[in-house]
Length: 76
Image 1 (tube, rainbow, N blue to C red):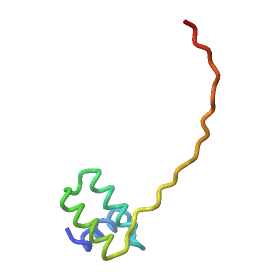
Image 2 (image 1 turned 90 degrees about the horizontal axis):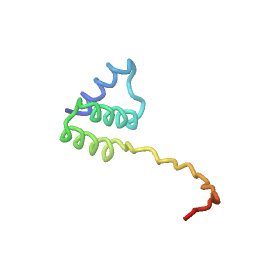
Image 3 (image 1 turned 90 degrees about the vertical axis):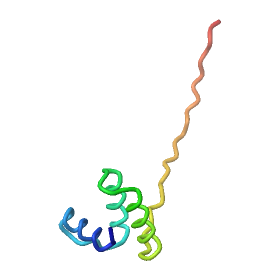
């Protein structure tokens, strides 16, 4: 599959054309997870999007959580 085919599938599914390669990357990943693409197609398109079209995955956000220390007794 070529990028042009991916754009066409995206447009048909979403009813608008992608404004950035990152949208295509998200669509590509969802298509792979749902079994619509083989691993070979996924890798090829992923590499093309990231190297030639500057697509990138968003930075992950980590929510900091505070762990509470609870006092407890152990009876033996």
